[in-house]
Length: 595
Image 1 (cartoon, rainbow, N blue to C red):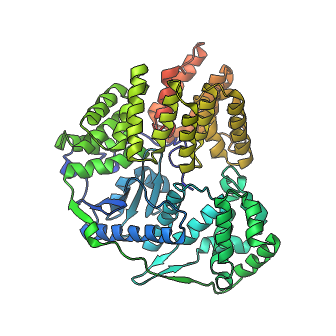
Image 2 (spheres, one colour; image 1 turned 90 degrees about the vertical axis):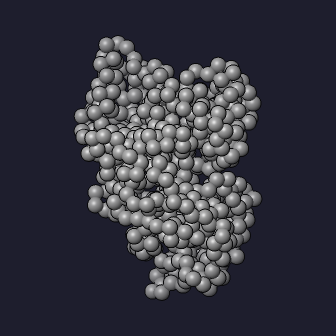
Image 3 (tube, rainbow, N blue to C red; image 1 turned 90 degrees about the horizontal axis):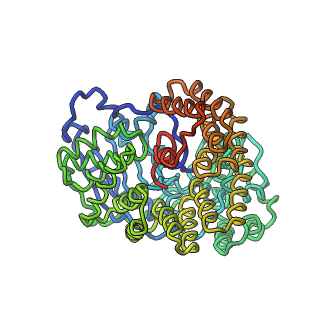
């Protein structure tokens, strides 16, 4: 489950990039990053790192094989992605800290060997070259499987999506074979020592279910999903593998997951008993498959990056996952070294929008667009900053043009789909196309609460009030049933900022019941109460949020809340349209500028 782009990130903010914190003067691009940096390109990946040319080439080969393996075992997966997936390879822990400083701070001394980041604006992998490959690759392969699944037309039931990702993500690649079915000890311990979910309930779980989102229940759900896929694929010498393929066929035909299970597997109680017996085995079967062919070496190109290229490449993930000050030293170094380098200019424009300098961001994005760029993020930035500045009819037309151009380059660019849908409705255009764009984006990001709220907004603006209300109520009911405080808090915050403060108040209240005195939940409900007209309640919540946050919030965040409290106490409201826009855009307050 990867939802990094839309969960509120209320934590430490504003510190300088870890390695560069003590710099008194701007560093040169050559000094900004340790070691020599290379770029390796294959058909489906772009690998950037300081782990050496040989290691980057090997990474490209390995990920091409992983991709070929997934397409081999799951033919329904998308055959190609429009854009190569970036992979960043750190030679050591020191470089890994540069990639993800906040995560290292949160985890203390615990290792972070690799992660897959799936955002509305970009997706990328970050790996530490000298870490344990088995652990690292299992985690990343699991999320890469989801990345491919989310781009196929068929929506898998959640149990199967997670079970297949766990099972196939654990594949071990050797020179002449693929070993499948490796045990995941943590998952096995869960299902061996606890009662299993009835299979009809397992099959019915969706992305709002408590079994999927609940902190206490989710580990069992993941473990049982993995165990069932393992049994159906390898148990009894593969006797039930054909049933699993039949289940997939029924799902592709849009048969209900529970009904499909009964058709494909027969008596579900009998299947449960067989699964329980299977999990008590002392030795579990492994499967072996013929190795997938390595890509043609001639199709993998490697080149050494200039310092400015490396600095701007590493800055972009930071600009989407960290407070902007973390990336500024790299952005400044890249721009100073090569002012006209497109990637450096793009990083500069992204930094400007992260710092809410919209005029500067708009001018930079527009200049990049006029240079003839084919980078969809630059086209998206030009369109969105134009909209932020209050586009007139001509501006809406130009933004629609740029968003369509971005989608022509990257059809899975979910932020562009969501923003194009919004632009079409603002223009009084085809609501059906807008809804299809948004629903297509939701297929790629099925757990994205913000996209669900955008659908509610578009239906409402299109005058389809009954459908909008029904969609919102189903979203709220699902969240209340999820038992997930973070999910409810997320919807509370974004719902309030989207003009739905009164409707999402039950989520705000329930989130705080589950995690009393949580700063983020108090903050969300405080803003929601202010927007719903409950001034005294808003002041009380915001004061409590500041007190509870302590040192986990930046000085700027605390100062902003105190200003809100003062304005509300004086009978005014700080939440005008500009402030709401800032809250939606600032990653330290929300999830980024994607929507």
